[in-house]
Every structure is written in structure tokens, then in C-alpha cells.
Image (tube, rainbow, N blue to C red):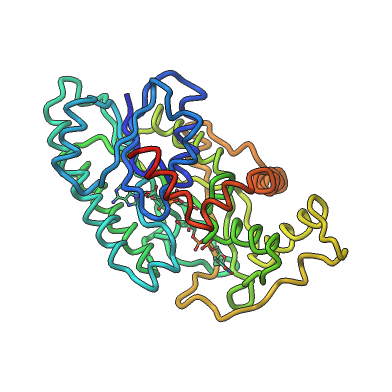
Length: 349
Ligand code: NAD
Ligand code: DAU
């Protein structure tokens, strides 16, 4: 049995769906159901006997101890976090609370449980982190590797960096068998439409403006979410405790180019009745404060040591993603209207 935290979010829900599609090992999903948690994503497995949902906070020590006692997980995968950079700029408090204090409490509860295990070496604590902890790159700098210095620039990335350091310390000091992955920008199904790609698809179809921060020349390294999930499974299976693994898609793209691609695919798959291109909706807006210019991941370690490479190219992944949003307008409506929260209350009353 594995315990997944934050499994009702974007990456966590994709991970659980893929996990149960590829193996029979049961999963417990612990999620606080913040605005980003959506149990609708997991409706297809709601009654699957291999799946258990627990509503709760990673910072709730008593609840975590109870979960460990009841389910005896062989591994924990910690996705739970506040994840949106812009929100961290407007209000960092929740980021400090969940990403730092919450991870600390989860580590403490895990240490107590792990200390009581007979086979302590077989246990794993896999912490899901981000490339943003490395800071920003110039146009010709080499990509981030596992030994790049941490230089986080936003409250979000600083809180993730702090959690990464705690995870590292629990290995170094107590011997807890931890693994950390630092991944680049994900995209794909169930992505909350506050993030660039789903926001642009949604706004385009609604006839709204497509906001580009600053000059739109900031670069991100895009990875299809299912590829991130397969990387996590591989690290859990074969990663060396105490090591970190960078995960990326070898897909550096400037934001404006990403938005152009989205508009072009939408022009083809959902043409506007007046024949105009969605590109006409692009609007340049004030830049994000402290906006990191470029991220790029050197993913050679995970390829050489663990044999993992992404399957999707940007072209194949982005087309699948647009198609998914067009085919799942109901999901988008639920999220943007807030009705997904009513659904959760009804289902779990
Ligand atoms: P998300 O915001 O979509 O989901 C986060 C989930 O965590 C939600 O279901 C939320 O309800 C839950 N949660 C929040 N606080 C909690 C708490 N205190 N206790 C229990 N659950 C809580 O995030 P995401 O995009 O799926 O990201 C998941 C993880 O991956 C995060 O740790 C993030 O830093 C990391 N990451 C994300 C990306 C990306 O591009 N989205 C890239 C690299 C790394
Ligand atoms: O790099 C990994 C990180 O990627 C994760 O750790 C974060 O959890 C995840 O949210 C993401 O962070 P970004 O800030 O890169 O993602 P976002 O989708 O918010 O923005 C992508 C780029 O697009 C960024 O340069 C800001 C820009 N942007 C974003 C929005 C929402 C715009 O130009 N306009 C927008 O409206």
C-alpha cells in the first residue's frame, strides 16, 4: 500500500489514475481539498476497492499517525502543496504553512512510524519538488542539474526549497530513506485553469483576452503530466535513497510561442464562427513581480541511472491536452463555476 498526499490536485490525481491502471497495489489519498483539490478528477475510481480517500491535512500529526497505524504504507509520495506562484506573491502564508510546516510535520510523523518498522530499508518517502528552487537562468546558461545551487526567487519556490532541505536533512540526520524529484512545468488533463496552458484554452473558448505577462519571452521546460507520473513511478521503484532526480521534457518554449501553438490548434479544432484566429485575443499585461526568465532541466541523470525518458513531444502532448479540454468542457465548467465543491460536499456528506 502507498500513501499519496495531495492526490486530488492536478499531478496527484493523474498519478493515482495511472497507478491503478498499471498495478494492483492499493492507494490511500490524503488531501485537504483546498481550492485546488477536486475529487471529480477521481470519480472513475471512487468505488474501486484499491482506493481510499481521506480528507485531511499533512500537518495533522494525530491523523497521519492514525493513517500509518491503520494502513501500514510501504511508501509515501508527497504531492501536497500550495503550487501557484501568483497566489504566493499575493499571500505567502498558506505556502509557509503547508509547504514548510506541513512537510515538517509529515516528516516527523513518518520518522516515528518508520522507526517502528521491521524492514526500515524497504520504506520510501518520495518528495515531489520543482525546478523553481534553482532560480532563474540566462539565455545561454546550462540547464539545471542535480548539483545546481538553490536560489529560489518567489515565496512559492522558497517554501518548496525549504521543504526539500528538510527532506534532505531527515535522510542525513536520521537515515530516513527519502527521494526527491525536481520537475519542470507540467501540462495535461485536470490542470487547474489558473495556470498558463489551461487558462489560455479556457479564456480563448470563452472569447476572453489571453494575458501574456511582460514580453512573453520567459522560457519554461514543458513536460506532459503522464510522463511526470511515469518518472515518479520509476524513481520510487529504483531510485537511491538520499538522491535527488531532475525530471524534464527537453521542451524549452517561450510563453508567447506556447500561446501561439494553443491558438493555432484551437483554430483548427474549434474554429471561431467569424473565421478570426484566437491569436487576436492575445493581450500583453503587467509582468509578474520577480518573474523568473528561464527554466531548463538537464534530465540526464534519471535517464542514465534509471532509464527514464519522456514519451510525449511538446507537439503530441499539447494536442492531446487541447483535445482533452475540448472533450471535457463539463469539468472546466465545474471548476470555473465552483460547482465542483458542491459535488464534493454531496458525494462525501
Ligand atoms: P495542485 O495545486 O494542483 O494540487 C495540490 C493538492 O494538494 C490539492 O489537491 C490540494 O487540495 C492539496 N493540498 C494542499 N494543501 C494541503 C495540505 N496541507 N494537506 C493535504 N493536502 C493539501 O498542485 P500540482 O500542480 O498537482 O502539484 C503537485 C506537486 O508537484 C506540488 O508539490 C508542486 O510543488 C509540485 N510540482 C508541480 C509542477 C507543476 O507544473 N504543476 C511542477 C513541478 C512540481
Ligand atoms: O516549473 C515548475 C512550476 O511550474 C511548478 O513548480 C508550479 O507549481 C507551477 O505552477 C508552474 O509554475 P509557473 O509559474 O511556471 O506556471 P504558470 O502556469 O503560472 O506560468 C507559466 C508561465 O506563463 C510563467 O512564465 C508565467 C506566465 N503566465 C502565466 C499566467 C497564469 C502568463 O504569461 N500569463 C498568465 O496568465
